[in-house]
Image 1 (spheres, protein in one colour):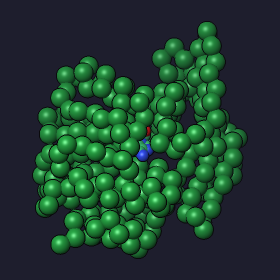
Image 2 (cartoon, rainbow, N blue to C red; image 1 turned 60 degrees about the vertical axis):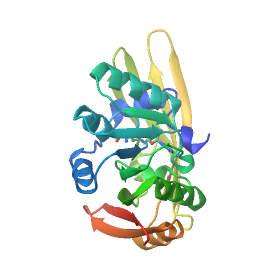
Image 3 (cartoon, helix red, strand yellow; image 1 turned 30 degrees about the horizontal axis):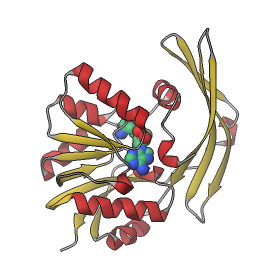
Image 4 (cartoon, rainbow, N blue to C red; image 1 turned 90 degrees about the vertical axis):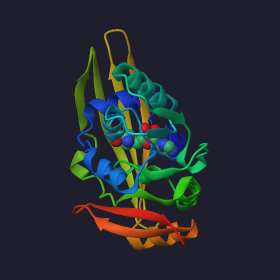
Length: 240
Ligand SMILES: C[S@@+](CC[C@H](N)C(=O)[O-])C[C@H]1O[C@@H](n2cnc3c(N)ncnc32)[C@H](O)[C@@H]1O
């Protein structure tokens, strides 16, 4: 399956009930306050900072590569009475009719771009959509291997009337290509049916120096901010 289609079918439902990490909107709100609007989130999904910021009435747009996420996101905005556009686009093929003062990814969504060539296209698309004085925020994350004791262990939770399950089946952790490929079994079980799908979750990473070199090829200057032990934030500006 194409990595940009990972969050489709039952995966968003299972992922949302089992996810343990939620990113606070605060750091993105502060970033937008500092650099201005309009703002754009790449990989906005159907949850997280984008929806909190949209509820605050910010001049905000989002894009996501998953048609299911886009549908779910638009339904949520309509239900919450929020006014923000969600586009069905891939960040590496971004084509919007305006430029943005602030562009951000919430959490390590840039890691979902499976290789350097795709990441470079995304960085070029970011450069093409930034206002001249604008800035982009890209969280960088170097994932650890999944601990062996967690492989084969099922996680389970209720999703309304259904049971959602996920199990890591196996993992390939390749430092040479900076890529972790985890095969995960997702299950959604109701009285009527049981849907099972196996997906490869690809996480491709950069250290700040590697990222800086790639961003420079896209005409972007990088500044790094250490957020915590696991995450560094790249702030990108158009090269002068
Ligand atoms: C981990 S989810 C995060 C969603 C949301 N930002 C949040 O904080 O909950 C990552 C999202 O990025 C989207 N995505 C993955 N690859 C993408 C790509 N190449 N272009 C745009 N969106 C992408 C996925 O469909 C998914 O909705």
